[in-house]
Each structure stands twice: as C-alpha cells, then as structure tokens.
Image (tube, rainbow, N blue to C red):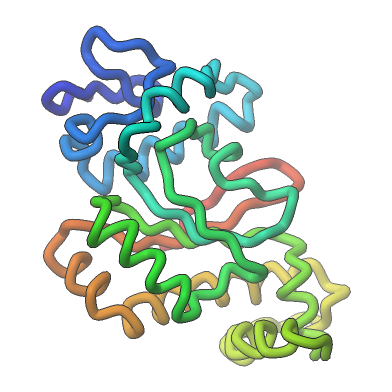
Length: 226
C-alpha cells in the first residue's frame, strides 16, 4: 500500500531508498493516515506473536532521531513489566510516544502528555492499551488501601461498576478481571475525549483516532476494541 514516499510493507514503514533501520521521518509520518498507523500496529503484533520481529538497529534509530522525533502514535499503557507496548507492537525508537501508569488511567498529567504528543508533535493515533491479569485492576476490585496507590485505584473503580458480568465478581476470577480491564480501557477513552477538548477536536476533524486495545499476557495477542 503506497502513500507518497512511504510504503507500508508487512506492517512496517520503509522510505523509498532508505534502510529499515532508520527512524521515522516527518515526511513519512505526515504521509500516513491514522488507519494505516493502526494497521501497522496490528501487523507488528502479528510479527511479535509469530516470533518474526523485524531486525531493530537501535543505534541507527538513535542516531537518526537525535535531532528530532516524529512518532506516529501515542500509547497509554500499564506499567506492568510484561506488557511493554513498543515491543509487543514491534516498534523502534522514534515510532511511538509511550506513556505508562498503573492501570493505564487517563489523569490530568496523562491528558497533557497526550496533547503534547498529538497537538504539538503530530502523532495521529492515541492507543489505550489494557492487559489481562492486571494487578491494578485486581487491587481496585479488592479495595486495596496503600498510600498514594489508593487514589490511583479509586480512578479505576468506576470500571468495576460499569462491568456487566454474570460470573463471580472477584479478583480471583480471571474472566472478571479481564472484563473490568476492558471497561477500564473504554472509560479511559471516554476520559480522554471529555477531559481534553484539544484531543476531542483533533478526533472530530479526522486528524487523529483514539482507540482501545487489550493485550493478552498468555498468547501475546493485542485485540483492538470496537
């Protein structure tokens, strides 16, 4: 699928006559649509799951991006050590902004960071990524009280109330934990749209897309939510 000077091949981008190792340029990023960037993420996760990840020359990417960055997307994900978004989507240095916080919540600091990524730096996709077996979700279900963590978990609790689930509503039930995590992703997206008129306007005018996803720790699959 060709777009100006950029061709999407197997979910990654190659500039005409440029090495795969190079970081994304402004011209390449600007030529991509939000839908193409989302498709690139999906293909990257397919490579990750199949064990056929592209060879990353991080030193070359570091050199290419040192003078300026042109990420295509901003990813809001959890701090869980098993869910590094840029790795499971097979991204390189300079491809994505990566904002991480327990439970992938969208507080004021995160909203400001996402506004910087999109309104200032030109990222075209905001991806909220939750994951299975999330400790923050379990903590919110169990009403854990621990210092500053208490307030963070309070932000997640509306997702518990919003989750319709017929089985056992317990942190010991993996199915319920995953269901709440999905609700939490959707509520984070709602918070981004309602809490940031800047991002909401960019989405309304088609300049960005705000989407949600869930990462399965067991099989490595990222499912994009509809």
